[in-house]
Image 1 (cartoon, helix red, strand yellow):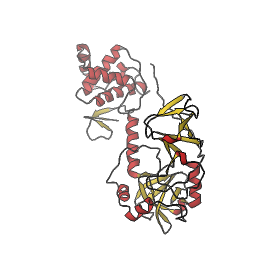
Image 2 (cartoon, one colour):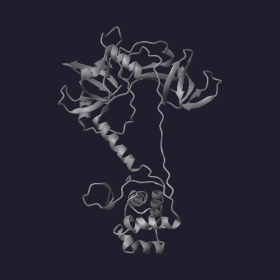
Image 3 (tube, helix red, strand yellow):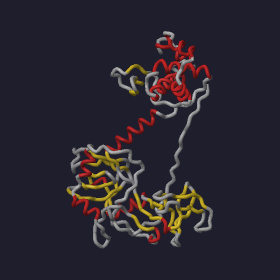
Image 4 (cartoon, one colour):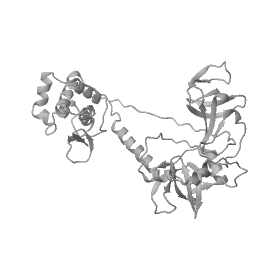
Length: 373
């Protein structure tokens, strides 16, 4: 039996902040035009534009933390959104987490208050208010209270942000060329469409900015981009739940590795699927095929499709002769062949489940009229 496994390897490359710019603190983020990014300045005016490593998957608008965020006092919002400069404020609005893993954010300044989200290590946000050893902060969609002992403020926050933040270069053009050298005559590495961003390496100060483009150093013209200094944001409980649920669903569809089969085995598997799930949705048919192939891969069952299907006490349609009749008749619907082939290719809608039956209240993965586990 041949098995293939598909692995996806992501590469992360660390980047250092090569320059921080003097910016205005607005509700729309720390954004400056790249051609004005000529010097290194502190970020004591704070930060409001924060990039998240996880793409938004939706929002539960009834969740506590969402309600909290939507009910932020107008005065708080106004103070955060107002434009300030280092001369106009003696205290930075920037706040950074000071934990090794995660920091709980509460609905109210009380350790027994409802947890509305978390700030991770190296995450930051902006201060909304402070009282009695607690700070109310906003980090992306997350709004809530954290204990001061787990936060960094003022210069400490600025230093932490400068170490973990990054400069992002965002294209303002629908087709911005990324070149191998800082010249309009240089070879084109690729193209950035509008609003696509990459990591900045350095503002050369001559109308060109070097950027990281697919792990290569490329160059873009500064007049066609903006730059932002960004740090990671926290997550609301609602966002965490949605992300975890999405991860579970993705895991259920992770390819299990192909199993070699000849035409007769494909036909036999399709016949079983037709008998067991012929009136079920396509996902349910693939699931039945996946259960068979998961057993073939498992050391607890026979290692051939025929032996698994005809194992004693397992698949009733096989044992009572129905599968054989369908197989011999040749009247097997295309959808069942497709589901059988998908399962042979390693596709699954139920992860590594080894069993299924009619849904009867048993816990498991429900697809159509069946529960899989």
